[in-house]
Image 1 (tube, rainbow, N blue to C red):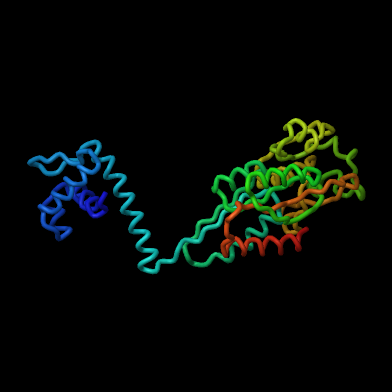
Image 2 (cartoon, rainbow, N blue to C red):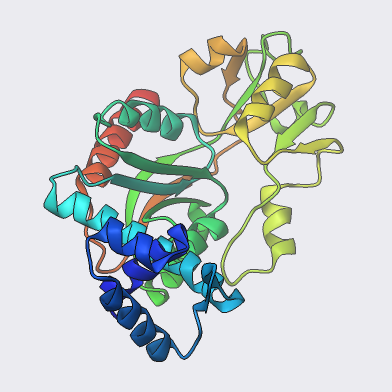
Length: 306
């Protein structure tokens, strides 16, 4: 299919006349007519019905012209980028767990975006969806979180799926709660102190090769009678701030975030469980300049907050 013929057809469709298109394109009318006939023959459709009133698009012709306009638009964009020196759009995408130190790193990273066009995606979700996002190329980078005792399950799965992985951080969860929470001033908090209160939790634990029921039992033990499940961080902070009966297990938060929502952070002496945050990307993927900048900001944020 000849791109030039396609351009002629789009111009005829816009003006509704071979003569007018010929005047606009500075091409002889018979040449345009012949080009459109060749295009119709190549496609096996009739694009225009010729009449005394001019060139009228057929239903198939309307559909084709719609596609042709998009194709020509993309060709113009490519030419603008590579022939006229228009800066190429910067692209970055990452899927991550909900964590203050990661969002702080992303905020710092955003400052490196210059005046050139940019397209950036940042998604907070669980490990299962992050792995899916990276495998299906929706996101180039991912950070997954899992308990240390599940390390072999995750590493085996990542290797089977052809994903590279690098350790980002290890930590134990802490408790965050309102400054008005009854436990906020308690010097030593234990597991037994928590059942009377409302736990805020993320409702999407995941471990490969293990039944969901087993994972839920370990990650969300049944010693708490009241739980509110939240999928994004903004609402969890509002709840923690406004309801002094609530608490949440999280990776350590920055003092800036705690002060913003009037929260406190406390350790639980009974909590010995260690979690890992692991960076993943597809085998063969070459890290871009933006990827490397984010990883640098992530490491700096980890040192500052964890």
